[in-house]
Amino acid sequence: SYRKGGYHAVRVGDQFAGGRYIAQRKLGWGQFSTVWLAYDTKTSAFVALKIQKSAAQFVQAALHEIEVLSAIADGTPSNLKFVVQLIDQFKHTGPNGQHQCMVLEFLGDSLLRLVKYNRYKGLPLNKVREICQCILIGLDYLHREHGIIHTDLKLENVLLVSTIDPAKDPVRSGVTPILERPEGNINGTVTSLIEKKLKRRARRAVAKISGQRASMGGMGEAPKSERNIDGINVRCKVVDFGNACWADKPFAEEIQTRQYRAPEVILQAGYSFSVDMWSFACIAFELATGDMLFTPKVGQGFSEDEDHLALMMELLGKMPRKIATAGAKSKDFFDRHGDLKRIRRLKYWPLNKLLIERYKFSEGDANEFSEFLTPLLDFAPEKRPTAQQCLKHPWLAEKDSIPNDMRTESSVEKVDVGISNLKIKVGK
Ligand code: ATP
Ligand code: MG
Ligand code: MG
View 1 (cartoon, rainbow, N blue to C red):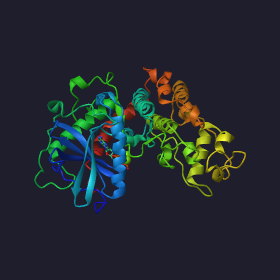
View 2 (cartoon, helix red, strand yellow):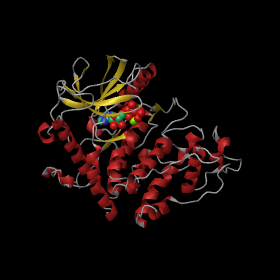
View 3 (cartoon, protein in one colour):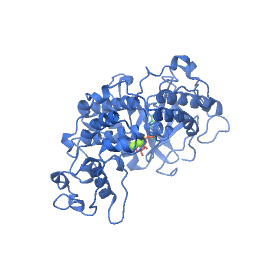
View 4 (tube, rainbow, N blue to C red):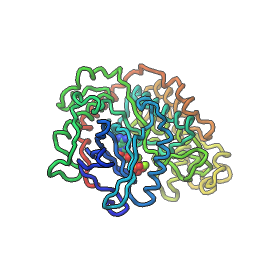
């Protein structure tokens, strides 16, 4: 992908925007871009630099993302926002062409990583609550104040807010910026000292979030000031607005990542803000259990779409006939009675039973959690609660849930796994 029209190859110490930004370390990549931690010499802060591939369609996509990000950045202090903030944008010319670049506030690991650290066991419910609250505040802001649908909510697109800002507190975090290209370094590697410090910082953040001290795996303890995790709220922000759209001008028919896709999108029956609420429910379930809510597969004699619809009905009951038959693609899947044509026998397993039987939730936890999620998974999009309504749900207000022993244990493991996962990604 590092060819004409593709990614821009970056080396540690590379300068951007006339020397204002200096590349520090690769943070991640997607289908459209590579994202680097960069040092902003003008503000003495660390930022995330998203460098888009250079072919015309990627430039176009970046300009759209910038349009959305500019609309949602309205001068409110960034720490009060639950959506990522755009700081700057510019073009950078390299051997592969001209790359549109976005400078974003630097955030932490994604929720997907958090769930991975936890070996897919599910997070303690009070942490799930805190994360849900952040996402809902972000969604309420997008939906009500800007009329924007995200359309691609999933664990990868929600990032934790770094609890330590290395630029504001370089002594505590121990991170000093790299100001020029280190001698003998190749693409994607940084000096081991700085790398160690970055790792330690990331580990601390993970430890805080998991509700454990950073003393696991012989790594040394978190500073005293950070030990009391009860008072620390997990914070996160919604990112990746490359697919977001204004509700009054939807531009794609097929939206959302498969597992988080709402039924009306599969049926092509039109969509609005409530597609984000469906994905949100899928995220909440995944955080609490470590498993995706729906993982449809192609089978003998049926498609992925049909399996997906069957899985939904096994969990939520039969889709009302009116809804099942109302989409442009309804006839592909349903007969005129509203029954699936090719998948006849459904095994009903309601959400609260699933939580008790497969995930060993207590009956109380299971019932309360499924009362929170089920309305969001209504087949009728207009019946799903809005983000604003959802924020008032009693489940979110609950504080002292009885910790489940199994879960506490798995949070401990998280710290160990996290360390080995924090390798620099090379090669892309
Ligand atoms: P996609 O294929 O998902 O559309 P993309 O090319 O649009 O990808 P993003 O998803 O925006 O790129 O970013 C790619 C990765 O870079 C993210 O998954 C995340 O790991 C990292 N990243 C993005 N933005 C930030 C940020 N503000 N702070 C820290 N890391 C970030
Ligand atoms: Mg992404
Ligand atoms: Mg994107």
